[in-house]
Amino acid sequence: MAIAGMILANNPGSWSFVYPPLLHAEWHGFTPTDWVFPAFLFISGTAMAFSFAKYQNPPSEIPPFQRGARGDNSPQSPTSSVYWQLGRRCLVLFLLGLFLNGLSIFLTGFPNFDFSQIRILGVLQRISLAYWVGAIAVLNLKRRGLWIFSALVLLGYWAIMTLIPVPGFGAGDLSPEGNVAAYIDRLILTTDHLYLQGQFDPEGLLSTFPAVITLILGYLTGDWLRQQKPPEDPPQILSTASLGLVQFGLMGIVSGALWGVLFPINKQLWTSSYVLYSAGWTLLIFALCYELIEVRNIRRWSFPFQVMGLNALFVFVASGVIVRILHRTKIGTGDDAVSTYAWLYKNLFEPWAGSWNGSLFFAIANLLIWGLILYLMYRQRWFIKL
Image (tube, rainbow, N blue to C red):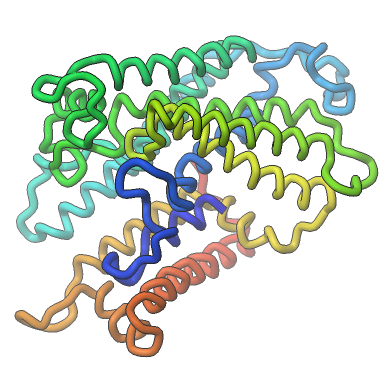
């Protein structure tokens, strides 16, 4: 669902005609689109609870129905090869993000292009760094340690962003140019390598640390869920596990909203309040999915999302490549030339659906085309992973 949301929100027919729920909040605030990225990190952490299970729980913490053939499932210590494999995967992910940024420059400037102003960070780079730091924390800290680490990072980020003065702006300035995270990015990366060569990068270095906590909260959710025994018969209302997820979700929403009074909910700054608030909504949606799929065995509706999730990395990178090509290739000559992307929207969607609905239907059609491609890959059992 998260990867489908990314593709839908990233590819309207025209950015001049996008319904508000499909746009990020301009600065402070929260829209459905602001849920998508943290949901992807959160669920990556949830999956980590299962893939890293053999390194984590002592026998007493694993329910009997989840223990292996030996009956103990004693935790293993991660070897150096585990860290090397983790580092390799995260490095490849980071380089894929850098490749997409470089492709934009290459296509825009061809045959004359200059990579001296390539943006270093981005969505894939943030996923890479957050997964790397989060995985190391998960492999080396017990459950209690992860809670303490998460609290320290969120409180520390709040303190840094509100108490440390920025030259020319002072302390507590949360504007795009005056916040501490932007100042650090300008200092380390320089403006040539920030988003649009501006004063601020929405996937900056400092704000990656609270993004790590989004992933760890997902891990803690998955770790808790592994210990819940599924009910033998579907309950009348909600299973115990689903009810727990709902309770945690409401706690996240309320605590995030309250913290937001002092430290505004802001996706681009990835504020501590945003971490809790977005995690709360993810937990509510996750509770619904868990109840329908795992408890009540109502699964057919989820099949398209399952297909997309099995090749999430491929579809994100491939769709990014195609949209960049469509934006930077032209149809027509001289002053009448328009990008292929704009031509498709204006000729295939806007004439019959209008500007606003045409832009939305363009995004939906793009999502459906990629869904079909992924379904064909699924039928062939082609799963591309790092």
